[in-house]
Each structure stands twice: as structure tokens, then as C-alpha cells.
Length: 141
Length: 181
Image (cartoon, each protein chain N blue to C red):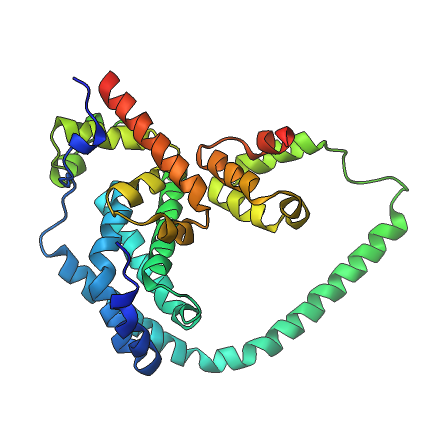
């Protein structure tokens, strides 16, 4: 029997514990209040933090500079970064990030988006929703 | 259905008495957001975590909210991201697969306690789980929350055209899965 989606009732099959919503609302409000009081207690620390951060940064930079100078003065003259193809980089990158992050990244690739008119962007958005590899999309453009 | 106009009281209150304004936001939106999250993460415990994270996140950023035009879409965007974070965390940490709800719910205590669907409902939920993650979100927001595409485009930062096409294809895929099962 062919079922169209609209024939299936909207009845909700998921259940919640009794009184769940009353309890969770109470928890949320008290978490917000707790967050407020925590912020007040930490205000002294917050005032000092920029100075601590600056001191720590200077210390780190000093160590790094010393290390860099030491390495540069003893290193042989060759590149330390292995050659990697764009495809290898893209494959590794895409394996490690999820699709929403990918969508956000698309927004920041300014030069490419500027070239593409609004209809193409619609198409790209749709293909990403269908889980098509963004690399494949750009290869086709 | 959009909720911009009914929220104008909250806008006012968030400027004059932010604590009271936030309490009203929680009162007005906790249930809707819970069910949106629950449909994505399936398990009650995970939905509970994501719901609380959503509101804490909202509370921390309530100052930034004043630049948004709609509490409704702002909250849904946060809730969606929290749901995806929970799903990704679960994927890395557990061997439990939720790809087949039917057997999961039949075989687990969690399932029998917190899922009460008939065969058709189970088939529908299983079919929805077969969709790519983002398309699932589009489908759920349209089918269960009756959200407009314009609102959805703010929630998901995706064009209306893409969302319409995605929903249309999601419906077809789900119908095929259900009818071929």
C-alpha cells in the first residue's frame, strides 16, 4: 500500500518522564542564576587576567624566539614541510570536519563566492544539504 | 508558524529586566526546543543535555541577542548546533547505533520506556534517520515544526531555494523508503 507522507499522523511517538518540563525549566533558571553569581566571584581574577596573559605571552615568545634562533642556526638548508597535493589536503580536511563547519567555511571563501552568481550559490547550498562532497562541486564549476 | 510579533514583549523585557525576560523565554520555548532537539538526537537523556546547553548558551549570549531580529530563529539555531554537537560526541564515544530505531527500541530499556510508536511511526522515524544530517533538520523543521522557509534560512544560514529543494527531495526519499520497506 502506497503511503503518502501526509497520511501518516503527526502523533508524537517519543515520551518524556512525568513532570519533566517543569523540572527542566527550574534547572535552567537556577543554572542561569548560578552562572551570574560565578561571574561576580571571578571578577577580580578577570581584572588581573590581562596582565597575567601579557606576562605569559612575553615568557612564551622569549622561549620560542630562543628556540627558533637555535634551530635556524643549526638547520640545514632544506624545506621542512612535505609537499602535499591539494586533493590530499582536502580529503584529510573533509574527513575531520562536519558538514555544518564546511558550510560556514564556504561563506569565508570570498573570491570564489564573489565570482558565483546567486543561482549557483543556491545550487551549491542544496548539494551540500544532500551531503555531496564540496570538492566535487567546485571541480564541476 | 513564525513567532516574531508575540515576542515583542520579550524584546522589551530583555532590555529592561533581563532576568525576567529570560524566564519568559524559557517558559515559552523550552517545550518546542526540546521536541526539535529530541527528534534529532532521539534519546531523552541527550535531548535533556542539549536543551539545557541551549539555554545556558543563550543566557551567556543574551547581550549579543539584541542584534537579532527573532528570538525564535536565534534559539532554534543554537538548539540545532547543540543537537549536532551531541550527535557528533555520541558517534565518537559509543558503539550504540541509532540507524535502526526499531531494533534499538525493542532491545533496550531506554527504548521501551521512552518510545511509544506504532509500526508506521517507527518506519517514519527510521526513514528520517536515513537522510543526511542537515536534510533531516530541514525535513523536521518543515514537517513537525511547520517552520517557514524564510525562518529556516535564518536558522540554518542556507538559501530558501536550497531548503525548498531539499525538503521536496526529503519527502520523496522518505516515501520511497516507507513504501519499499
